[in-house]
Image (tube, rainbow, N blue to C red):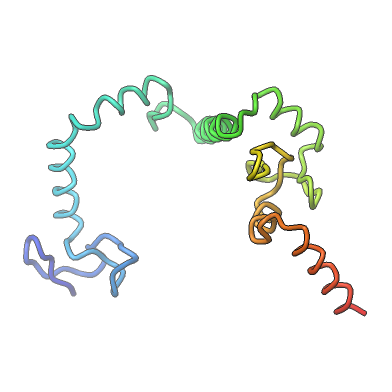
Length: 163
């Protein structure tokens, strides 16, 4: 049992919304109080975000859940994500698609086929696109800070350790 700080009623712990940052993993107000507080806030602050909301909705970024299937939702999200990367790195859609086909829809380093949206690998000094990588290989390059010496040391270490 836990006491709600808004309505002062004791309720079962399952009646409180989850929150990772608290010791018990729940909010201090019950679901009903939390929901009503959010509704009131949305009514009072809707005007602040309405223009942005309508603009994003017109562009198709905000999707109405009942009118779109889950697979269509995923396709649209992937499309917008891919557009973001293209805008960030100056890569045209045709260039991105040709990179994908040139790499045979697989990672440039480990050669495994992509099962998620590929990461666009680029030189951090010149911002030139080098290729498409899976998340793990992109993380590996990032952790090594794109430094070839670190990779050479790692190769020597692996070769020496396996002999």
